[in-house]
Length: 401
Image (cartoon, rainbow, N blue to C red; front, side, top):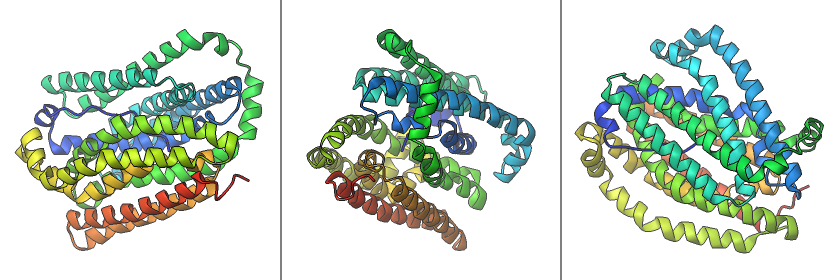
């Protein structure tokens, strides 16, 4: 599935913002990321499929147009329902921030569309530049706001600043190199392609909605069932452990999608590319994740301050899950390449059910660490199933129908 733009991590931030402030920022981002699943209709995932670049570009334009339209609708919803939504999330003080959610969803939708177009064109330098700009600018803005004492609103403002700059830079690079093709865009062609690839919004909005909800549910449920501080600890843990996914697994996943899509179109399978990428991911990850498991609590206390040691204990619990995610997530694009959206949807539904059950089980014992342990085990099970199914798709066991 599509991923959010990676977020920079700075130990200085954890000394400028409290766990509770991180928790509130996490609630904002949870709402924005769940809402962002709607805005493109998941059409950006179809950009890799057409044989002709002209058709792929029309799909990218379709996804961006939908991002603008649906984000405008979300703005109307927030204008009327911001306070009730904030109360439902268990933090009434969150209401003023929710007005920025449509801006975040718009920027995420635009960026993802441009990202997949660059991925199709094998323009990995563009992607690296935009990710670096996003991470650096977001961190600088959040640091500046933290020193100014702006509170958790500085985290939100910094995130949006990073999104604006990353999207602008990527758009500028694409226009400079592809403006001739862009001038050939015709709205009616985009409409025709929207009908051709209707299975993407038909199945993947729901499937990826479940996936994103599963990813954000820990923050929402930790805040609702335990407290905002626990959500803050989890947020830092999640950001630290997502770094290798964004920097390494994300880059390998970009290459895999491009190479596998070409091989699958020609041969109906991409076994060799799948196995090569799997071996790379395994060899890169096994030693670092093993070491991290044993040193996580002390490492977090040393890097981020003693008040964040609990986040390191969370990280220790979640390491097996992160290890399997690192290996399987870049390869899960096989579901899209093989057009097996129904299988992906079933997997997402099962995952969400397990995630919710995990945290309510922990709430029964009044212990968030028990909840996180069950949560990590549930994810390990589902990532194992994901890896097996994606491999069967890669070897052509289930051809697209």
